[in-house]
Every structure is written in C-alpha cells, then in structure tokens.
Image (tube, rainbow, N blue to C red; front, side, top):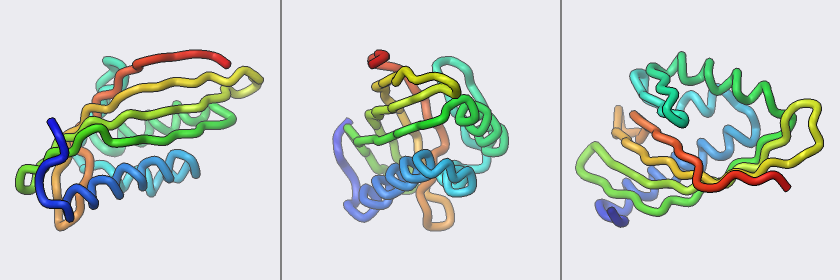
Length: 136
C-alpha cells in the first residue's frame, strides 16, 4: 500500500484523520462521531464494536477513565479506489489515568477502511493494534 488515488480524496482522508485527532484532544463526542459511518466496525485490540452509536458509547467510557489524553496520528499509507479507500495510520497517545500521576505513552497503528458517503469520507472499519506501550 502506498499513497495512491486522486489527491483531492487523499487530502480529504487526511483531514478526516486530523478531525478525529482534534476531537480526541477536545473530548468532543459529536465531532468524533462524525468521523464514523453508521454501520462502522471498531476493532480495539480484538474487542470488536459494531455500529456508530455503540462505538461512541465505548469511546466515551474509555475516555472517562483518563484525566488527560493526547492523541496524534500520521498516515503511513492512503490508497483510494473510487468511493472506497484503505489507510494505515500510526498514532501516539499520551495518557494519564484518573487519580494517577504516571504518564503512559503508547504508539499504535490503525488499519482503516473508508468510504465516501454523500461526498464525505468516513471510517467504515478501524482496527487498532499497539506497537509499543511505556510508562514515563
């Protein structure tokens, strides 16, 4: 996989990834929700959640366990084929659990499937895996 397909679509997908990042930093559930398709699937370390509402509910529960979440992502590949695309996205997370002082730094990767629906790109499937997990 590489960076292939129309540049306009690749840019729109990059902006979707950036919107996802921004929503995590701001803990904005509605903005984060808007990045997913209605029937999306989120594979979070083998725990599969299906449907946008269930995905958002799971995310809200996870976010509630942290006093701070920093999240940034860099695409390693975006491949567009018509109104469908796949991407590999590397992420860095800085996490502080509620009531803790220790900082946890996690690096991971998302393997994504996307679709252009009504002119906008959204995630239809995100599969997350941890590449490295360390406490500072």
